[in-house]
Length: 296
Image (cartoon, rainbow, N blue to C red; front, side, top):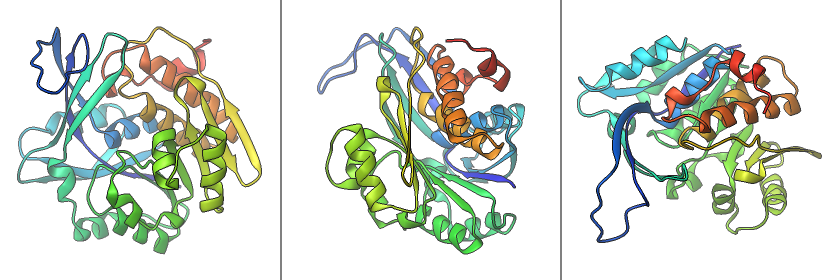
């Protein structure tokens, strides 16, 4: 059983600010750092650090994204399905406030140049029972879902960032949804409490397993009539940028390696706690050994 993460590769320009810039405001930042990032890259590194074997597929631009591939390789991710295309690598401008919160502006770059021909070339190497992990930062998501369904792959979808295209995807093919309250509300067409959203999602996608993250209130999991709750581990917050991606990677990695859903949720919560206590996106993701040693 293999894991394919067909996802984004970004260069993160992270600015430390007193508060998020408001309309019409010009403000100086206290620091600026350049990190590897992108939800796809972050989740691949988290999957690999959880102990799972993962292949990353995606694209970078010419000349500016080579270090992203190096970092994936250093984390143990297989990178032979990453293409180098003319143009710029995707990037993000991230404002990081003093409380660890962030707001993010994305530029798709090579992430939005994925073609169906590229997808077909990658999918030829995977088969029934393999896992496919997707976010919403690359082009041809709907087509990738169709190909995964044809092959009988297990489809994991993190619908982030939310946009109008998501409603056009064949979401009924998704085996695992991993999403937050805002994303859940957008998919359901109305907001509500965590429990209400979990029920609405389950009604809308009865064949899917739902993982709903609730920020400081932890997360909820539903598989049919089975519902699990998972709290957070409280730590001093340095940077929340990769918390969700770390949670996703360790959760799916744990499940693929045979953990029960409850065990995988707890593993993921510990990993996310460690990640938010450190600066940066991908560099903040802990190893499996660190997570197992974490006592909260």
